[in-house]
Image (cartoon, rainbow, N blue to C red; front, side, top):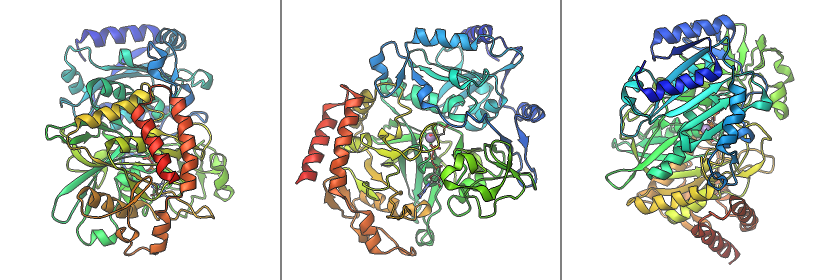
Length: 593
Ligand code: GTP
Ligand code: SPV
Ligand code: MN
């Protein structure tokens, strides 16, 4: 507990509104967590899994209508609408507070309000930021215990300061029509109501560490980005770090934990995971850009995770993990998901908790027929990851050599290209596009522009966000080089051409060689593209011609994209920096030559 009057007054006020039966402070202890797990099992909120095969692991099912982030119900509530911009939904703070107050009033009656003091970043470090989440969900408490650093030491570090993010979450009655995820960046406040799904309710994650933090980062000259961070250690023991922004369910966790292919492993290369979803970046005293992962765990996509695609993730979630909306194997009380193995359980319940017949699986209608929901997830501790970086708990973070943007593009974007400058790289990030995935409610597979993979997560005007990127370039004396990748090009039958996963390291090696000035490139209208021979394909069953195909820049397709980008910039509105519009004009000229 604490004597901090800002904390205590705020909790009083929230408790008067939500009217819980009691208030319980989460202290970060294992005893308390264990008691909460037992309580959740007694009510059915959690199912205790086979403790021999999956020690410390539990299964949770959300409501059927509550399985992904809801971007349409996510709001940025700044005083002025222009400050939220056209890409965000906006409500005035007054209107939003009064609307949500009605939903919160009495919403915790008969329930307990849990008080979770947590830190994003290492408690007590220069770059840590603190939050308190109030919630009526044990599932949220147990997830926050994995995903963030929780406990009394956070309250000690906060002292009597009012500088913390006030998060209020209530499941209320999970009413979809009254579901709201609202951010008040001017008040350091987040209000979430009527949901129980990860990204909507684990308020330290997207709500704080991206939406509120991006707003703070602009004010304080640092960056909060939807990026993984990984280190590549070369045989001489030197480690270089890269960060990469891919949209939701587009491969961050997989890249962050990759296992080097034999050709590099036998030489002694190693890959270390610093983070899989969020990076906070600032300029270091050495003039480089340094990154920390503010989280303490992974909330990873389950489907597709297997012994071949991502063994590190699989091992990470084999203990102390919470599985959400996966398939329950009733024979041995374990879990299963599509893409885990070729042996679906015969006696099982699907993600909804209904008896499941694997023979009815139709990959064109996964939500209805799959055992696990396409956006089913595992919540697992970073310390349980076999390749967690020795720098994971270093408050200074790691210096970034390259920033990589990427999306799911069946055509258009080549396997990899390099931008020509920070400004051009910012442009490359701003024009990112990707096919939508099951991570957010709505249609899947539709190409949409998703700048820097931050479309759903920028807590202010997207035009100002682009400007912030350009401004950061001016204060980083030795900035990372900026690249773009695409693992998802398909052939005429719709099959992925590039093997992906661990083999993506072959592309990372080219990127690092470019950073060191050790390899040449071909200049194209969109930037520098590798010579096909410079992508190491030893041990792969693809040919040099395939690599050439993956690296082609189709000018017609790109010109069509230019028109689409113009429309998107118009949608973002009048705060798109002139420099980026100039970049677009120059790109068009180069393509038309
Ligand atoms: P969020 O947690 O939603 O932010 O997603 P993420 O970017 O961490 O996505 P993740 O790594 O979990 O990947 C999601 C999906 O992409 C999974 O179904 C993977 O199997 C698939 N995927 C990841 N990497 C590759 C790749 O290199 N090639 C192909 N074809 N698929 C990939
Ligand atoms: C994403 O959707 O980008 C995620 C999962 O990482 S969530 O925490 O739900 O946002
Ligand atoms: Mn994410």
